[in-house]
Structures are given as structure tokens and as C-alpha cells.
Length: 205
Length: 369
Image 1 (cartoon, each protein chain N blue to C red):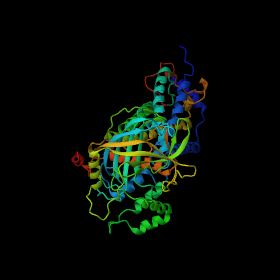
Image 2 (image 1 turned 90 degrees about the vertical axis):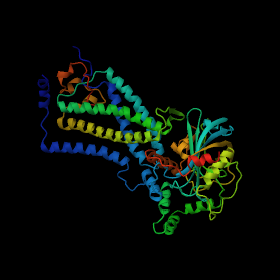
Image 3 (image 1 turned 120 degrees about the vertical axis):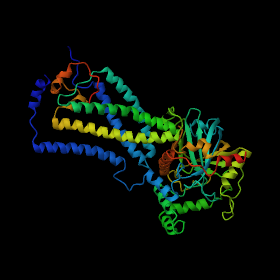
Image 4 (image 1 turned 45 degrees about the horizontal axis):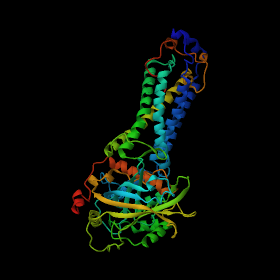
């Protein structure tokens, strides 16, 4: 059976999406906590936060479609069953949050009837009725989900560092922004490498 | 089979020494702490003494108490609605479509400054008018104005200091005069602003009050030209001096009069845009712009409906002064972003609270019909 090329790495499009969104999401989380604590920069930060959130919402849809189109590289053999489960769970969590956080943001602004301005006079329609109690609940959820997202990212980052520096299985090469030849990722688990793409997602956001 | 293939690779890697392993764990710890620390820095957790929207909102609650479901400032008010009829004169100044000839619906709210929703109306209490213009393309323009010609403070920090200095002390039930004196010594701009404010006669009611934008903004026209502006709404109702503050006054006399007037006939204001010249301060709301600046009358505001808090559309609106359509932009006034941030904080707090009846009830509003 012919192996797809770059099977040991995520597809180039997946890697571009991963790193672009990683930068956007970290920026977004920092802007989020900074704007609610800032008097002087509140307005500037809010004006970035809203369109950036919508950009993330669009990109996560692109990313989800992209993921269906490209076979995923297998987990390294060095990952235990428990680690694979944890990685899969955190990946599902991050996919979910990438989608839900902007939607909750859009929804809460709709319920409060704040305009959701993207640029100039371009703004989004409201997706929920004007209801301040609903706003209050969604506003709280937005914060809690954002902290959850940050913690998941920290866990993901810690796991990657652990595998890269302690286990030294070259796991980071799977998501390296540059192309790496197959022989450099020697520890790939060949028992899954030849099988069709698994139903469960990979250990990356 | 997996083990067969991976074994040589693992054998290739030299075992890590104890020191090396520790160093690598330390590196991981450092990297994670750096990310968490950056996040904490942006969240303001490393600078707990910095003035934040939450602390400023807390100050209102310390001075006036927490009144469930009410705005933390300008707590007492009634909702109004009507329309703005633009005369087209503003088109050359701003591309905002609210200035094209025609009519847009307006929802508004008259209020009194302070976080006490049941405070008695006083002639010298600062009066507020919040407006929301709903533009045909779905854009919104909100403005929160007051009847003072200038604002008493220049920065959010000074606002906070003044608010704390105005907190009544338990012994006398009044603010400590020494505190306010010390504040004024630190803030000569406030002393100057108060002189300007005292030089303006206060009118008898909401209907004949002039309401000022206070902060400067920028108007951007379709050619991309930007000019500094302030605006005000000037009543068509004739001026009448305010009642003597020492006279016996009804608890809701200002609101009762407003309700009766609106039931009699629609109330009107001219929206006047004042165009700043180079050198006119846009970042200092305590300083009036010189007399003789060009004033453009851009249209008429008509308010013909009044509603109590319980049934007004204005109740659930945050009159955030930075909800602006394309064509109106913020100036460099530090109060603008701060107002937006604190209004948002106040709105979020009251949104989730149980709503209490307001001082002006729906029955009060119906009385004059």
C-alpha cells in the first residue's frame, strides 16, 4: 500500500492553520483579560477583540473542513494509551472552545444589543433576543470558558515540552512549521501508520 | 512490531543524567511560568493597585451602596423615545448616515447623577440625557450627555479620587470637607472647571436643559477629512431659572414635570456640532473651547414618549459613549475609553441582578396622560 506523502507530519495546510490560530488565540486571550482590567486601552482592545474573535470563528470552520480532507499522522509509539486519551480529549476541548467562545461572545453582545462592529460600518446581525439576564449568564460563561481554554493550552504546551525534552520522541516535528523528511521521525508507531486515518482526533489543537 | 521498529530509535538516544533531567524539567517549568506570567501581566494581576474598571465601579458602590438592578451611576431616571430629523448640514462634516437628511428613531433616558435610585430631585444635581440613534443600516450611535458645560475632572484617576473624597463620613452624613479640599489642591483643573460650571445658570427642568457631549470626538467625512468636534443639544423650550435649592421641593419634581410636559406636547432640542480649531484641547474635558467656534445646527431631536424604567427600551441599553457609527470616532480624551469600560462594568453587574421597582413608577408616568 502506498503511503501518503508527509504522513509523519500534519499536512502543510494543517500546520499553517495550527500556528496561525495559536498566535491569534493567545493574543485573543491576553486581549480579553487586559481589556476588562484596563481603563485607558479598553476601547482599542475591544475594537480588536470583536473582529479577531469572528476571524477565529471563521478559521475554526476552515480548519475543521481541512482536517476532514487530510489524513492525520499517527501518535508516536512513546505515547501511552492514557496519554493518547488525554491528548484526544484536550484536542476535542480546544476545538470545541475555538468554536463556542466566539459564538458565546457574539451571542452575549447580541443579548445586550451592543453593536458587533467588524470594520467601519460593517457589523454582524444579532443572533439572540435583547435580554440582559441572558447577557449576564453568557458574559460569565465567556470568562469561564476563556480561562478553561487558557488552562487547556498550558496543559497542551506542557505535554509537548515533556515529550520533546524528556521523552525526546520528536513529537514536535509532527507540527513543525517546516517540512521534515520521514526518516527524521523514527519513532512513529508503524502499527497505526499504515491504517486509515483514525476516527479520533490527534494530540494537537 | 511497533516495538521492533522503535527500539533502535530509543536506543540511539543517550540516557539523560539526573542533572540534565532536572535542568530539562526546570526549563519546562520556566516556559510554562512565562506563558502564565504573561497572561497574568495582561490581566493586571501583577499590578493590583492600578485603577481598573472594576475598582472604579466598586467606588460608586462604596459611596452610594449597591442597588440591585440599577445603574451604578445615574441610577434614577425615566425612558423617553422619539426621533431625530437631520437637516443634511452635517454631511460635509461626517459621513455618518445619521446626518443625511431624514429621520431616524431615538430611544433616550433622562437621569440624575449619583448611584442612589431613590434620591430626591434637587435643582443642583447633575442631569443626564442618554440617547441612542438607530441608523437605517443597523448602525447605532449612543451618546451620554450632561447639563454641565465642562466636566469637573480630566482623568479617570481624578474621577476616582473625587468620588472617594465625596463619600459621606458616618459621623456627619456628609463628605469630609478636608478630603475635598485636599483633592482640589491636587487638582487645580477641577477648581477652574467648577468656576466655568458656576458661571452657567441652571435651568428649571429637564425640558429646558442644554446637554453637552463633554468629551471631544472626531468627525470623519466621506473625503476622509477628520475634524475635532464637541456637540450639545439645545432646548427649544424657553429657559427658566432653576428653583431655589432651599425651597421645599417635591421628591420627584423634576421627573414629574418632564412627564407632564411630554404628555402635553413633544419636546425638541437642536443638535449643535461645535467645530474645534487647532490648539483646542481634545484630551481635556475640563476646559471649554473658546467662544466663537463654528457651530453647525445639524437637525432636531424630538422626544414625544415617556416610559418608566419598567417598560422603557432605554432600561436595557448601556449608553456607552463609544458606541459610534462610521463617521464619528473617539478623540484622545482619556475619559472616553474609561467611560466605556466603566459603563460596561456597571451594565454587566446590573444585568445579572434582580430588578427592583424604580422611584418613578409606570403609574407616575401614566398620570399626566
